[in-house]
Amino acid sequence: MPLSHTASGDVQHVPFDDLRGTLARIFERHGTSAEVAAVLAHNCASAERDGAHSHGVFRIPGYLSTLASGWVDGRAVPRVEDVAPGYLAVDAGNGFAQPAYRAAYSALVAKARANGVALLAIRNSHHFAALWPDVEPLADDGLVALALVNSMACVVPSGGTKALFGTNPIAFAAPRAGHEPLVFDLATSAIAHGDVQIAAREGRLLPDGHGVDRHGQPTNDPRAILDGGALLPFGGVHSSYKGSALSMMVELLAAALTGGNFSFEFDWSGHPGAQTPWTGELIIAIDPAKSAGRSFAQRCEDLVQAMAAAGQTRQPGERRYRQRARSLKDGIPLPATTWAELQRLADGPI
Image (cartoon, rainbow, N blue to C red; front, side, top):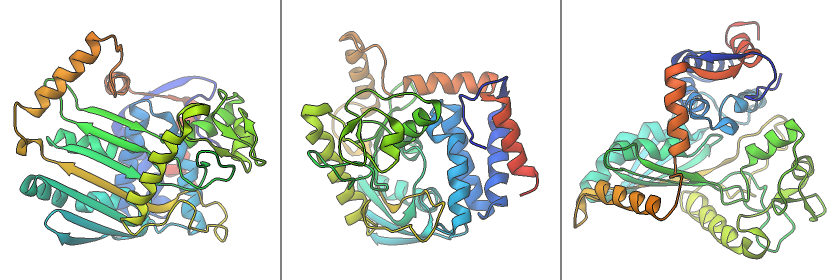
């Protein structure tokens, strides 16, 4: 059954550790190693905890369908390569990107602190999750972080009618004095692909300027976008070239530079049920302690306060942190039917 945060019926508040443990059992029972299951479960549970529903338990059927198709190796062991003083590369072995990132995380932090800046290039990988969890830990460790990942072709370039780019998100995080890190995660498309899927499931139309149908004609019907259509880059009708240019940059940095596939290059037609893009990811970490002037974290806070004084009522990541606090205090709200289905997937017959 589809797993949704918006399903009707009673709501159950699930402790974070219970959700994470249940998801880990699901992943392991459906073909991943225990190590991969733990990483994916933490990522997915964290997204649900923070209210990022398009990357939370909503994604579980897609993960399981992909694993069953044989498209991704759930037991892949990443191979970390120390390329240069400020450069790490990881071959994910046709596995998921998050375990590959975990395998190189400590070395990335050490290189950034030793050299002032370091980058991690992940190739031969599948990324099917929110991107902000990749950068927030680096900011918690006092570093400035930038991550870019490309996905499957579902976005037309500016002025085009055929899908070429992925939603190609960019995530950024910076330490902030006295507060949680400043974090944002945005798609270079008009809307995230997962949000289109949720809208289609709920029978909602999208705002104008978000997508085209299979004939390249503008549409706000999410089903038409998913059925052979495509998303548009962000920026609106007259400024989509801005989102398109950034999406192009992500393709070059996350795929061409890392050795991964462009969003349009891989063919999953031989694996019915596959949903995870087989591409690449680039993560850049900067140590602000090497810079001149006052504490970077304090300067970050100064800027946030100036934005608030200028009238910006919500800062990047603020809503996510508020929801995180509520979820950790009261439990993660899930429809009872969704929680029951997750437990069945974890412990019932396969």
